[in-house]
Length: 409
Image (cartoon, rainbow, N blue to C red; front, side, top):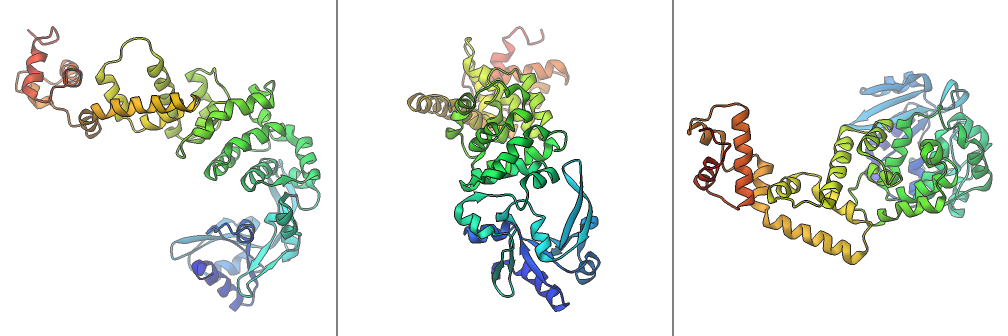
């Protein structure tokens, strides 16, 4: 456990002050499953004020719930006092807690596989909820009454599905029944940002497609996206099938867009805003939509237009995503065609990316062109001439430019 020396230091410090402290939750689960993780949370019987007093760098991120962020050598660890959650509000957060024992703290958690502790001093696992048994059985089981666990935080329904898909586990029968019974209660209890975060976590482990299918099976996907209420499970699975050929860097939104195959750009951007996604996602969706138009357009496309397309940071990703539905031979041919086309334009693409045009504003000024809209138009036309006619010398490009009607007489 030497690799977790900062976490161990926290435990040692608390122990030297007369308290017990354990690694908690998902890290213990991953330890047993032999999935290495650095995401360690610590649970202790030390009160929050004592935690703050023992460590010089702390942030009280959830003081009302006994949660203190302890910073050791730049690394952050949540240190939480053992507690019971006595009352919940709105199906998402406790409104009243009481500090408690390790056993009581374990029993307030969501699933048995997340309810175990690890004592790094004795190097032993403390399992008060039979989580280890369920790991061996490959089961996601709510701790105690599944209806109560879901009532406390409706997001647990989504989380159960995510964990089941990540570990290829089955959701235990009573827990599954409770999820189906409460699926329609997902909103307004759960903020959409929390659901988007669950999508992101599933995507990070490469299991977003099965998670979305499983969410539909439990009636949850239809609550998140009501437009899917009349869409069958088979159709959802079919719509998502291209994702098996998606590159690893394909964002979450690229998966979700497949659920709505006939959507307009405005509808796709509204989906991003509904999920409160980043501006990067919004720009990606817009670029992907316009790429789709570009590769299906009937008119001839100039070399200059292709060069600007390939110069965009999203171009390779967009082509890989849009080629995913094609059968393998057509997909290979499609990507090869664009690879070859890009190679022919490479010198111009590099100039576009570096904002280093062959003909510059200084060249035009030397010929009497004043800064303004006309200069901008002439610079764009100069670039177009250079790329379309494959010219690399400024004098050649300027000669062609001066022969056009755009050039002031």
